[in-house]
Image (cartoon, rainbow, N blue to C red; front, top):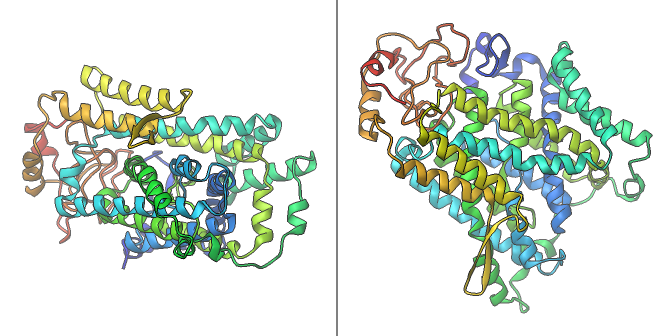
Length: 527
C-alpha cells in the first residue's frame, strides 16, 4: 500500500508549502473521477509538446513515443512504490546522440542509436545501486540546495529559449495561451482554476485553427486505429545478417556518456518535485528507486524504437500550478498516452498543434520550473552573504546557461576519434558539486554528526516551514521522519506535511512517535 493510499480522506487536502493559505491535494479521489480524469488530461497535454518534439526532430515514431512514455511512467511508479507524481517523457539530452548516428533520421540507422541509448540506461542502474548501498544521506550531502537550487533554475531557463522560439511563430496566438492560463489560475473558480494548462491548450488551439495556423490535411489522411510499434524500428531488428558491429560499438561509446548529464538532471528534477509537493521523495521512496525506474523506462523505450525517457520538468510546472500532488493523476495521464498511441489520427491531431500554442504554454511552465529552484534556495535559507555560496551559484548558472547558449551548445571532447558533447547543464552541475566539496564550509557538520542528530529523540513537533539543513540545507530525510535534511527542500513526514504557514504540523517516526530536532540544533547549528 502506498503512502497516498494510507492518507485519510480528511487529510487528502493539506496546506501547501508553496503558497500559505492555498490548498494542496494529495488524494485526488476526494475530487471525484471526472475531475481526476481532467487532471490526467492536463498532465498529458503538458508533456505532449516536448515529448512529440523529440521524435519530430530525430525521425523516431510519434506513436511509439506516446506508448512508451505511458508505459515508462507506469513502470517508474511501480518501482517507486507509487509515491512520486512524476511523468516520464522524451529526453532532449539524447538528441545529439541520435544526430551523431542518424544525422538525417535514417530509418536503418536509428535502431543503432537506440541501442546506444539502451546501454546508457544501464548507467542508471549502477548509480541506483550506489544510492542503495550508501543511502541518500551520505550521497546527497554532495547535493545541498546551494547546488540543486541553481541547477533547477538553469533547467527552466535553458528550456525558455525553445518556448520563445515557438512563440515567435505567432505571438498573438501564444499570448492567448498565456492569458488563458493566467486568468484561469488567478481569477478562475472551482475546476477552472485548477485546469489552466488544459484550458490554455484548447483555447489557443481553437484560435490558431480560426486564423489558419493549423494544417488538418495529415489528420484527415490518418487511420483511426493502428499499432504504435513496427519491428523494423526496434533494436531487435538489428541482429541479423546485416548487423554492423562497428556502428553498434560507435553508437554505444558516443551515446552512453550522455547519461551522466541526464542522471544529474534526474536528481535536480526529484529535488524540484520534492520541493513543489512538500514531500521528501529523495529519501522515500529513495533516489535508488527513482533512478532505477527512470533507467529501466529508458532501456525499455529505446529497445522498441522510442526516445529515452526522463522525468519531466513540464509536469512539475503543472504540479506547482494546480497543487494537485496525487500520483494517481499522473498515472491516469500515462494511461491516456497509451490509449492514444494506438490512434494514429489522434497522434496526427497532436502533431498538427501549432508551435505557437506549444510555445505559449511552455513559456509559463518553464518559468515555473525556475521559480521552484529559487524557492528551494529561499526556503532553506541559503546565506548569500557568504562568498562560498555566491561563487557556487554563480559558476553553476554561468556554465549551465553560457554553454547552452554558446555557438556549439556543448563542451566537446574527442575520444578515440569519437566526438562527445557535454551539455551546459551537465558541466555546470559537475562544477557545482566539485566546488561544494572543495570549498571550505566552516561550521558544517560531518555526515556522522548529522546521523547522530537524526538518532536523537525530539521534544516537540515541527512547525510548518521548519527544515533542518546539512551544510547549506537539504531535503528532509523521511527515513528518520524528523526533518534531518539531505538535499534541499521542505521537511516531510509520514503523519503530516511540513509546510509553510506557521501552524504546527505533527511529525512522526516510523513507530508513530513525534519527533523534532530544533532543540538539538540550537546547540549545533546547521547551515
